[in-house]
Image 1 (tube, rainbow, N blue to C red):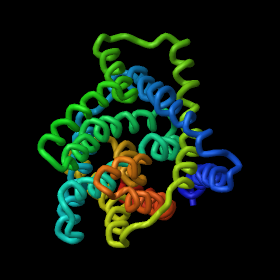
Image 2 (image 1 turned 60 degrees about the vertical axis):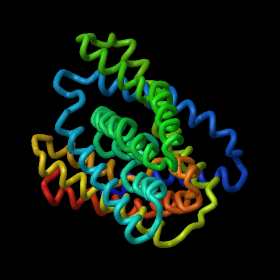
Image 3 (image 1 turned 90 degrees about the vertical axis):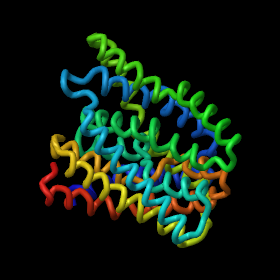
Length: 311
């Protein structure tokens, strides 16, 4: 009941965004600049504040990063093998299936839910860890493997490196790392400014998720949708939990949060990323299915984790 009370208002905001766009009350184009503000200003401010402004010893934890990366890469590998063996599809397409299983919508859904459950500071730390793994490992790996030809692969790899060097979230992470390495501390006015910007993120991000779902035109094979949805909402968090249990040394409350982040639906740009291999319709269907289904799976994961002694 506690979990439902925490997440129900958040999914209500998603539903409001969905209804506003689907009914024409708000044009979809009107919300796109809001998404840009979240991605380019609010989330980078949140990440910088979470890492650079964290007390000593509470920045990025190597053990946590290794566990999150291990869980995500395991989910990615299982996704590729299953897609090739069962769905009988090519490696490039299988890589995009695997991306849907192993990359969470951490910024737009994960952080708002984690903020309700764990507080803004802990949710921000969790988000920073997830962003490192997703943006530096999982998404680049999927894009490189999805390249059809050798030359095209090299070209896409170079384009990917350029995109990473301009990604506001990556730049915020890099700046926060440098800030901590130099031993600097944020003055109080800077903390309050960044906090104000960070607070913009949750409600705006949830509205954007709803608007994105309203613009989708779901279709695609049932087998692929089922694989992606089950893999994302069940296997990814399960592998992440197993990785934390094997590595150890991470507080139970943090493990709980990381597993819940892994249990979130896939990244909202998933259909766009899948367009190059002709799977955008399948990805759109999986995204909508997982977003709806996670209202049930999240309500099951939290008490299960607490029963296991995490949190």
